[in-house]
Image (cartoon, rainbow, N blue to C red):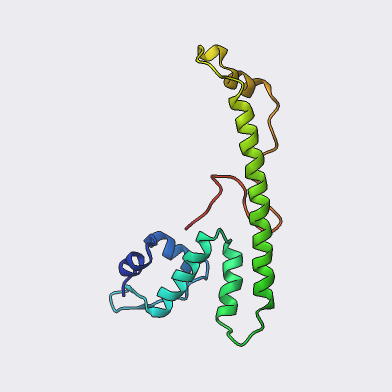
Length: 154
């Protein structure tokens, strides 16, 4: 199948498929005489795994590790368990951070409970006078990036 068909079957943009190829997550596809990429069932399965892992918010390095074990089916999977336990810890930490963010936003929202002129808006005035909280979009030691706009390719 050509890249467009693979993209359609996996609901994955063509650019993202090419990105995963460049990152070494997908093997090089065969080429036609006209230099079109030709993908097989192996690519389809592997891309489906990658997409599922991304939906679980796993990093490309985590996915690389999981694929390495997938490619070596006789290996001991202890490292896979450790990886997933670590990822669960990351998710728990993010949930905690998001709850703190929600609390902060609710407190900010309470500073303006009536309609005023923008110059008298408690939220806007509070944002201008309160010291900034530590930056929320920061990379953790596990390579995860925190923050709502930090997500990379699908």
